[in-house]
Amino acid sequence: MGDGTKTLRIGLAGLGTVGVSVIKSLVQNKNGPFFMDCQGVGVVAVSARNRARDRGVDLSPYRWYDDPAAMAAADDIDCVVELIGGAEGAAFDTVRTALAQGKHVVTANKALLATHGLELAETAEQRGVALAFEAAVAGGIPVIKTLREALVGNRVTKVAGILNGTCNFILTTMESYHFNGGERRARSAAAGDNSRPEGDNFAFTESLAEAQRLGYAEADPTSDIEGFDSAYKLAILSSLAFGTVIDFDGVHTEGISRVSLFDLKMADELGFRIKLLGVAELSDEGLEQRVQPTMVLKNGALGGVSGVTNALKITADMIGELTLVGPGAGGAATASAVLSDIADVAKGRVVRPFGIAGRSLKRAPRRKSSVHTGGFYIRVRVFDRPGVAAQVTRRMAEQGISLESILQKRDETAARIDPAGRSGAPVPVVLITYATTEDAVRTALERMQNDELLTEQPLLVRIERT
Ligand code: HSE
Image (cartoon, rainbow, N blue to C red; front, side, top):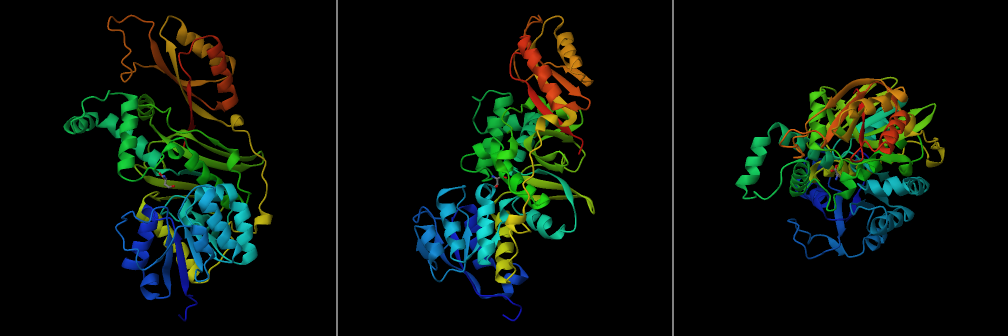
C-alpha cells in the first residue's frame, strides 16, 4: 500500500452489538472508500465470554480466545479493539496488556477512560502506539476528533451535551405519551395489557422497556438512568476541551429517575424541554462539571433533539458556537466510530490520546456547583392549605430570590384529587426563579422542609437558556 497504510492484524475483544457490527462492516460490507481499497486490515482473532452464542455472524475465520488479555499478548496481533466495557476487570487487563506490549488500542470504553485514562494515555505515549476512543462518547458523532483536532486553535470555554441516548429516548417517549396519550394507551391495550396503572411511573417504565427492546439501553440501565454513563463521557470531553486531567469524581451527577410526566408537561407549557444535560465549563473560578436534568429552550439547539439522538454544543473563542447532532447509541453508529479509529491506526496516524502529553494536562480546581447563578425550575409538593403559597414565597424572598412565575397545578397524573373538592391534599407547586444562586435556592428549600411544608423531596432543575 503506497499511501502509508500498514497491514493491521486486529484482535477484537467483546462481541456484543457493537463488536458484531464492527465485524460485519469491516469484513463483509467494506463500505467506505478506505476499506474498499485496503486489503491488509482485518480481524484475525476474537474473544468474548460465551463462545456458543449465535451472534448471526460467522466467527469461524477467526482464532478464538476465552481470555482477551491472552489475545492482546499474541504475537500476531497489532491492534486490540476493546469492546468489553467496564472500568476494571477484563477490559482494563486487556488494554493494559496491549499497550505495555506496544500494540495499538481502539476502544469504546468510556468508564475505563474516565477512570484510568491518564495512566493508559501515558503508557500509549511511551510506547508510541495509539489509544483511540472516538466510539467512547456520543456513538457515531465525531466529537473526540472535533475537540482534539478540528478545534485545536480555539480556547474552548464550555461544552454542553445530550450524551445518553437511552435517557433522551425515555424523556422524549414520555413526552410523546403525554402529547399523544390516547395513541400510546391504545397501543398498550391492543397488546393485551390493561393491568398497568397510568401516570408518571407507567410512562417512565414503559419508555425504558421500549429503549431496552430496541437495544439502546445497556443490559443494566442504572448507569444510563442515574447519569453515570453521561458523567464518564463528560469527564472525557472536559479533558479534551480544556487540556485538564480527567476528573470523573468531580462530576456532579444526577439522573432522570425523579423527573415526572408532570415536570415534562410544565416544561412544555413554559416553552422548555427537560434534557439530561452534561455541562462542563472552565472559568477563573475553576472547572465545573455536572450531569443533571436541565430545562433547555424548546426551540434552541438542544431542545429539538429527540429520541436516541445525542448532541454536543461547544462554545469556543474562534468559532463561537458549534452544535453536533447525530446517533449516540446503537451498533452500527458506534461501529462507525470504531472503524474511523481503525483506519487512522492503519494509516499510521498515531496522535496523543488527549491532544497533549499526559504530563502536560492541568489539574484544574473544582468549582462548587452550588455557586452557579441562573434560573431554576423548582417543583415542591405541599399540603393544599390556606397560606401555604405565601409561606413558600416568603422563604424564597428571604433568600433574595425573585420569582418569574409560580403555579399551583392540579396533578392529573397523581390521582390524589379530593372528589368533593376539599383542600388539604398534597399538590405540586412550581416555581420559576430569575437568576439566583443554587445555594440560595437550597437554603430556601431547607427552610421549607424545616417548616414541614413539603410532603416530598423537592425537584430542582437548572434552566439553561440554550
Ligand atoms: N447506553 C449509551 C446510551 C450508549 O444510551 O447513550 C453507550 O454509551
